[in-house]
Length: 85
Image 1 (cartoon, one colour):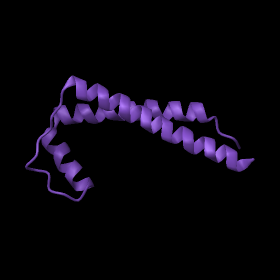
Image 2 (image 1 turned 135 degrees about the vertical axis):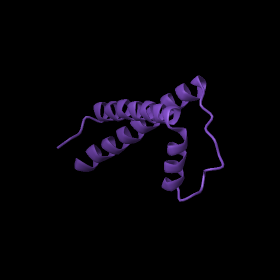
Image 3 (image 1 turned 180 degrees about the vertical axis):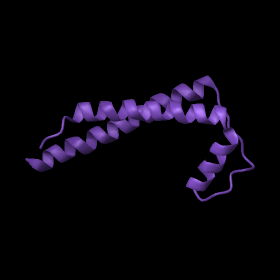
């Protein structure tokens, strides 16, 4: 079964963007809890650090993570399709 690489990449970019926005909202609402969870995810104690949230950083991260995620999944699905033939 061939995959539509463009649509899969676009869907991934949309979901990555929504995830970025949701995580950013959590950082604004519960910054301490998110810092603890981030530290747990990388096996580090980040309790002495703080978040630096501003609109420019939000939009740059949103565009960057969405684009990179979409491009990555597009490349995977395009490679998968080529391997099928």
